[in-house]
Image 1 (cartoon, rainbow over the protein chains, first blue to last red):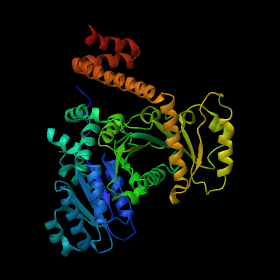
Image 2 (image 1 turned 90 degrees about the horizontal axis):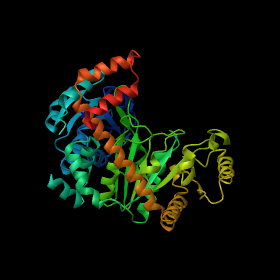
Image 3 (image 1 turned 180 degrees about the vertical axis):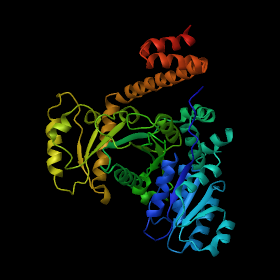
Image 4 (image 1 turned 30 degrees about the vertical axis):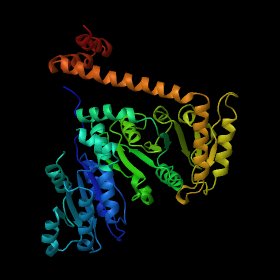
Amino acid sequence: MTAPAQTKPRVLIAKPGLDGHDRGAKVVARALRDGGCEVIYTGIRQTPEMIAEAALQEDVDVVGLSILSGAHLELFPRVVEELKKRDLDDVLLFCGGIIPDEDTAELEKLGFKAIFRPGTDTRDIVKFVYDNASKS
Amino acid sequence: MEDIVERFLAGNRRALARVISRIENETPEGREYLRQLYPHSGRAHTIGVTGSAGAGKSTLTGALAAEYRRHGKTVGIVAVDPSSPFTQGAILGDRIRMQDLALDEGVFVRSMAGRGALGGLAPSINDVVAAVDAFGFDYIIIETVGAGQDEVEIAGTAMTTVLVNNPGTGDDIQAMKAGILEIADVLVVNKADHPGADTLASQLQGLLNLSPKDMRRPPIVKTVSTRGEGMQELAAAIAEHREYLDEHGLLQQQREKNARHQVLSAARAILLQRIQAATPDEQLDGLVQRVASRDLDPHTAAEELANVVSG
């Protein structure tokens, strides 16, 4: 009976681009905290490079992107590219915010395993993270 | 395993990030990495930044790191935020104040959750700092959780402890109390553009003047971290403290003290693990019941447990 090492998910919640509304990102960060995750929150106006570099330095298992500006199809591919550049292709990706249904397929192709839109129960987000984050 | 240590020593930042996680999670690989990397550590000047929540520790840490970068020095930052006592979850938000360093290759920022450790740091802080040190940074800045009056562990981890104060946070009796003020090697009055900064600085000076004559009196530096003001003076005060440590042979003394503390606390953890491994759950449960019902006192119960390994 030894003390169990902490194996709870380490999650980066990031807001790429220029929209300044981070209420949603904060709600998700808080829900994950209450779910027992260690959540790194980096604030608004992050470039794709900043997000990928934070993911690398913090050695996160999960990256969640929040966006309300409509620029997701511009910015998300660049975040994915910057993550790949740093060999971070094993990180679990999800996103949320104002994202039209017709963009779902393209985001899934990019590697996003879930899209959480307004009205989502935060417990579903916590469950998704625990079910899918592989602690390597 | 060799591979990740090799990549670490070749300067691969992802290897550093991964090694820190393994060490932080106290995995067997983490122990092995630390064993291999420890001889490479001990070269950086480690600086602790402490002070109450909202004092400006993260902003000051970022501004100080930027000052070192202007002189071409590399900086590792380890920033601790508290874990929830109920869910063990944490929000690690110190990076928000360090955006200017986000893409600087000469800086590495790692957030750590306190994971229930007392004293303003995290259980594996010394091991993590040793790993960051082994990577070869010139300076390592360790930012504590928001500290009140008694979180003094940082003084054992860092060579130079910087205490960040703000105007308008209590009278000089607060500052006279024992505890955190005693461990400061450099005192900062941050938010020095706010009213009351000069009053606070002179109150602090007045208190320092009461210290015994043969004691080193920490310098007081006024800063406005959000604008980077006072960072040259702060870096100079830190350098001056380092010289003081070197001149008086105090660094070696501090290292030995810290090493002793670390060895003993690691030994304590190992013994506890052995005791727990050797104790059937029923035996422990039985003792717990007897203590809870006041049939037995905790120390006698502990003796009984400890006898399992010593006898």
